Amino acid sequence: MEFSNANMADQITSLGKPLERIHKHLRDFTEFVESRMTEIKPELEGAPDLIECHVCWQNTLIIGDGDPHCPFCGFTATPEQLANTLGEGPLDEECLNCGAETMCFILYNNDFGVGYCTTCGTSHSTCQDCGTRFIGKSESCPDCERRRR
Image 1 (cartoon, rainbow, N blue to C red):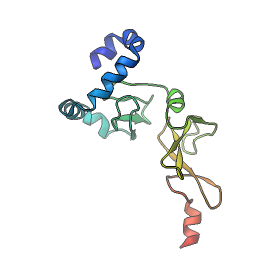
Image 2 (tube, helix red, strand yellow):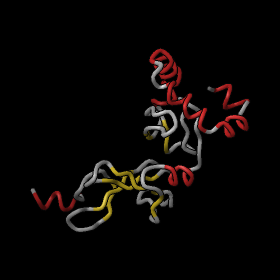
Image 3 (cartoon, rainbow, N blue to C red):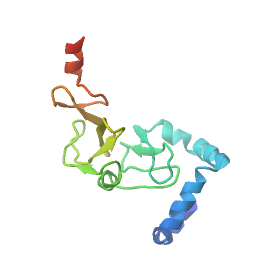
Image 4 (cartoon, rainbow, N blue to C red):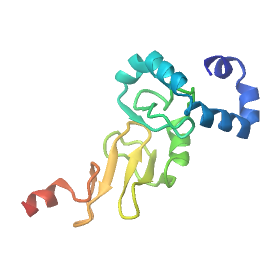
């Protein structure tokens, strides 16, 4: 994979669907996955945030350390490109943590989803009680949670 990404980038881009099939089948090759995870473990341990890579389906997409990149399969993108690819697409909002305009919406189930910044990896929710936008992955903001107690 590293050789292909480093030496055949143009050919890989033109392959499209066949390359997607290769990535899909690699995740079922247990020995390869275990070996690759061992190789990249030091990079993953130092990552600010990890999410599932939409290319290789491993929880190895690093967010918050330069451009989003996956050391497992070699995928890389700008935060803007990733926001257009993830979840329900880009949101027209700034991140409450870093101020970047690279938010997308990730739906967890039919009732709940969060905004996610593809620059710093911060999750945002909108309080179901008061409508306030806040950093976190819950249905109520900290103020409304305190009021309930």
